[in-house]
Length: 351
Image 1 (tube, rainbow, N blue to C red):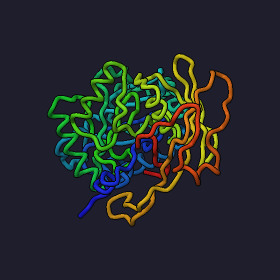
Image 2 (image 1 turned 120 degrees about the horizontal axis):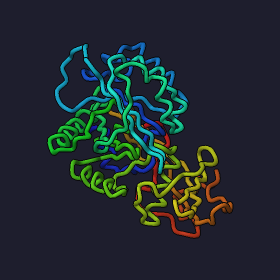
Image 3 (image 1 turned 90 degrees about the vertical axis):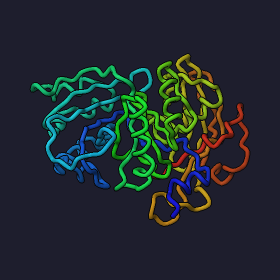
Image 4 (image 1 turned 30 degrees about the vertical axis):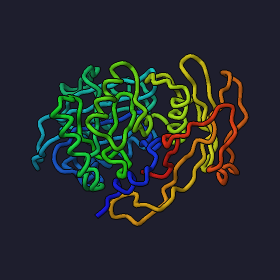
């Protein structure tokens, strides 16, 4: 039986712009089994999971459960649970970590501050011997989606990858509950930068980590930086493809203007250069399963239709309009040719 990941791969479905959007990640270690909605279907108290979901809504913080790769005993008691908080904005990324025995104490965090990148939001939970937050100085966190109750591809493809990475000495490897995009399995995210990758292999992950040690990112297989919304993710990767700049913190999405089905995204380089990127949303064809067992659908994707260089501070003519949607498959004029590879298209629907 074909899986959603097989169908997506066979159709060469674009990866760019499909990452879950979050500026900051709260990761709570929770061994044992996970249900489809893991925050309320694991050995974490459901009331705590629901409260964390409510507390982080609209703050830019995304909560997920993590566990070390391997077999997971179905036990309900865990002396201590590792916690990471990671902020992903370029030039301001950081990771803090602690170990705690009472996960409900995380509800005292200032999630609005954490979503804005202020580590001071951790201080409300600092009381008590198990609440000392430290700067994380270890290897980059490699978070592989493995939740088979959410989609079987995550277990069939994600868990073997997580095990292989651990066996090969990638010490920052963790399994994670859900980062979206089952059909791109094996899918993972690397923190603190927040770049997500799809159809990953142990070799490609090692290439990503080697580049990160040099302050670079690998764009091959990249779904986008979770810091940005999905039009912004597609626009940033398009500018990287155009310029060849792989600096991890070289580009910032200043703003995304417009609404579905058309956006103008302003991307700025650390040296002051700016680009205006036109992005339009169209339906993918032919229909394909968006997850295993689902009916065939046509997930929305975004196409980059133009990349225009602008002087810093000067507005540029718009390159995306609602009318452009109907002509998205036709070559669009621009000052610089838009990238032509599949990496310039992105899913805009929930993944």
